[in-house]
Amino acid sequence: MFDLQGFGALLLSGATVTIQLAVTSLIIGLALGLLGATAKMSNIWLLRKLATVYTATMRGIPELLLVLFIYYGGSILLMSILKKFGYNDYVEISAFWGGVMALSIAFGAYATEIFRMSIQEIPVGQREAAQAIGMRPFQTFYRITLPQVWQIALPGLGNLFLVLLKDTALVSVVGLKDIMYQSSRAAQSTQQPFTFYMAAAIIYLGLTMLITGFMMWLEWRANPAARYAKKISRQSTHSQSTIG
Image (cartoon, rainbow, N blue to C red):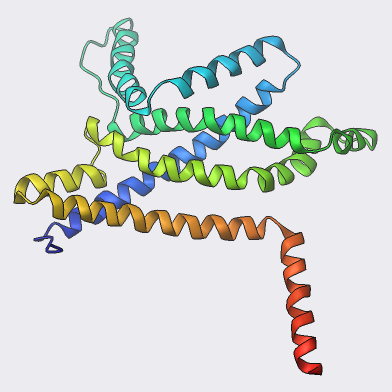
């Protein structure tokens, strides 16, 4: 059942590609989410509408279709632009960057709402106090808003990242050599699909457990009050045991 018949290295290389795809999409998606949340809370009507259209559209389109649209449609759009400059050869977007664009856009749409709700959780008086002491808008956002938003949004973002990790499997349909691509290739070569798809499931499960543990650590680091309370409780317990 667990005899990989020499395909173990391919599965590990696929896992590396999957991790690279997920982390790259996460970084870009977080930036898009922050920009989208800022636009949604802007005083400029056009920015609010554009952000609303972005989130409503991207959350309504399945990620698989988004991957296909960007991979094939992006190549067509790029070739049509290059033809205007006299370049007539075939141009193709790489499967990796096509997947990054699709997953980042989808992640950013969901992250926009998480960031927006997190910002709204912060009392308005804190921003008003920052303005009263002469802080500029960027300083207020960086020193007052962002640290608290990070703490509030972290659990939701962690769940989104787990979904993003599993959605990377969709990019295999356009030829990205990730876990699903390599496991499918091994299954076809050996005629043992159960073995290799089970191996892929175990790899995804292992990555999910690692990410979950890391997110729990980040949540603990982002909550100094909880760390301090736990430290006091531990000291109190130690003192009581010493006295007893």
